[in-house]
Length: 107
Image 1 (tube, helix red, strand yellow):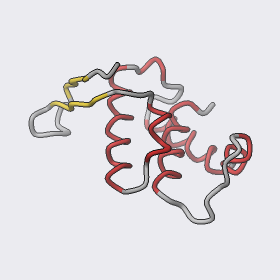
Image 2 (cartoon, helix red, strand yellow):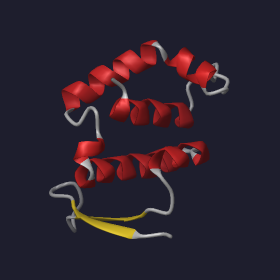
Image 3 (cartoon, helix red, strand yellow):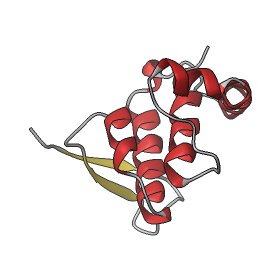
Image 4 (cartoon, one colour):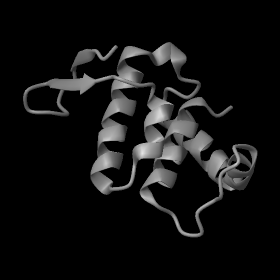
């Protein structure tokens, strides 16, 4: 079932709202990312998830988020190996999304 979330986004958008359809879980959307627009849409949903589900985030502050991203990037080859995926030889939009999502939950 697809739903729509309307959030108060403060000063981020002129109309102070974000409208997001949520047909699948966030981590499931990473596989479909292939362009910068796809990544931007994913980042918008990631931010909306933080606003609506802050308790689901292991790293809800910028400092903790960036620290987790740093640590994940340092060991990302293990993520790709453990999930049966080949690590891209060059960064791509999907890899950036992997980094961002991992920073949400990485301990």
